[in-house]
Length: 279
Length: 255
Image (tube, rainbow over all chains, first blue to last red; front, top):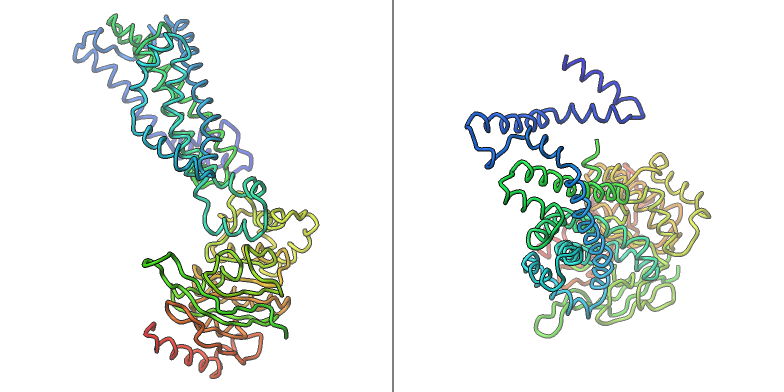
């Protein structure tokens, strides 16, 4: 049966236009081991809770997480929206401010000697440590969380942008100069596209950390959001709902990372990191 | 023949004071219009440094360089340059990369469409115009880079070990193409290499550069007929040029 399946998907894949269904089939064919492992993980979890007779207030089986999470879906979705807003606003602000600032630092010798080393120092500070301060300054609302997400995402974005705009190869630099093109033209035609892959390293790193920042900021002080939810239900001895909260937080992180990866594929399809992931 | 490139007392020192490294010179050199001159020397002798100074991409410490009647101060745009690591950008196709050279100069690439097609044909890349650099072999990439360096019709070409990273067989093929193109269009070429055979096969003159600090030790005119095909390369005259140059470098203890 497996052989026929392979033959079928190979025949479908060879046709010029690959439909969504075929792409799913080829994905299943390539990743079936992982899929089996993934399902197995949850089965072992499910069974061991019963087998070892673990109290429900310590660990709940996944089936119960789904059941209880479904019952509390309204609250979970609303909190996902809240945490999602904090994450997206903070992240977008980090990109919108970080990228031009990285560019400015890369091209200004004054900024490179003042702001840049300062940023490198700040990068060493765990930004999360500032969270209680911002909560105490700005209260329980949206703004302190946005600022903390911003801080967590901003430094990898700006530092990678500086690196990106500073690392044009010597040959391409000489090529630009030998054409007599002005700085603006050289930037648009060569420097900017050449810098995009390294910029995306920062964007992706920031995207991974954005939800971490939002969740921890909510742990420290808030009255809504997934971080708040996870903390409250854990206090109420409800690990089932805590796992449901973690699940939605994970979805949020995946969605953000997915969007950034999609943007990368669309903007720099020529880059090796994108080409390698294509089949 | 008019002298097209004139170097007078050109020298380069990197760094200052006690740490200064005397890299090159002083060198006096005259290159005629239509010349194919090779800068031949061991690694680190400063032959690339000299080429960059001619292009105005590297400041010289002293001396004068006159190119086409005008002194070189700052990058010159009337030349074509090619490096060992090519300047093809990965986000453009072969044709797009050639067009980049024109766009950077404010020239509308559609006006040169025919010229680009002819250039691609001359290096056998006409079927690869719409491919991206990563879809090409190293040799094809260098051929494309050669078109990129020639598309604005420069009178002077500066080639810095363009075949340095290629395998022996590909090098042979591209040398032949390069020679054909030079014979057709007769640009003045400065060709930087550390391959003695390559220098003898391609050049009308070979400038022998000494180990650091580099100086032009000797200029050897290669008096062999063009095109230097298989027959010429296997002639005793060709072998004797190669041997004479090998003797010179053996004298330096380089080989």
